[in-house]
Image (tube, rainbow, N blue to C red; front, side):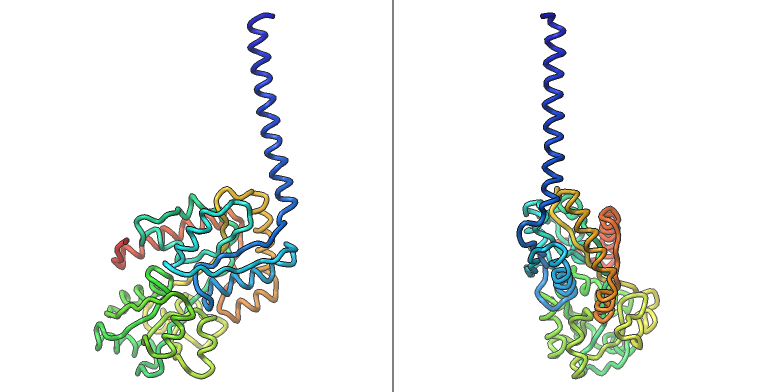
Length: 332
């Protein structure tokens, strides 16, 4: 046989093997997507129960169970402003069975931690943006401040004496408070807690004088007057407390900082599964009963494609990096 013919046949054979392999990968991915899920799906929340991320995770778990025809379990892994849960999910199998609720904390951590064991953009696949979450500035009733202007005056008169609670360094409530300090030109003491429930308890008991609380954390405390709400952190008022002014309206023109939440999966998760989860979550978030539930919790529905969510997270990382640099918080 002609040597050139032998080379041609070997190349043709190799190309055939590659084509078959590529085809089999495609078939495997399709079969995987068609059979998914065959076991319970886990939604990991990087904070203890009681906060926005936990509320969003539990609502999605309830609503996803029927269309997936599987149990959807919420697992709380609090600590390190969500970094512990983020690392765990980043290192999980990319098979669609482990999902993570991310938010403002995840977008702030790259500017706060020098050696994170994961990369938000590299190690996660964006699935779906879910909600925007304004927070409420509250004070303990014992504090003689009935509005934001009085709070600012009090803090200026007592430099380093007024304390504020958060769910951890670099968390959205922490950045909200630091931005408040900078714009109000006051010196206050930061007291971090492990989660929204602990921070809310500390606020209600007077362990700290001021906090930015999520609406889910705030609701149980309003009925008996255990905290006094003064303003909301976002540019717009919330439907849950329509009479409450924004911080921008109350005393600090231009103040605007809200948390957000979305769902991600480990990088490399099958695109068909990511697309299916995205479509399911978008449908859930846009349902009238969910919109009503979100409104009562001070949440604003946000949806979009996985690509749009990925771009949103990149923008949030950049925005928080600028804010953290401006405030002067040093990376640890």
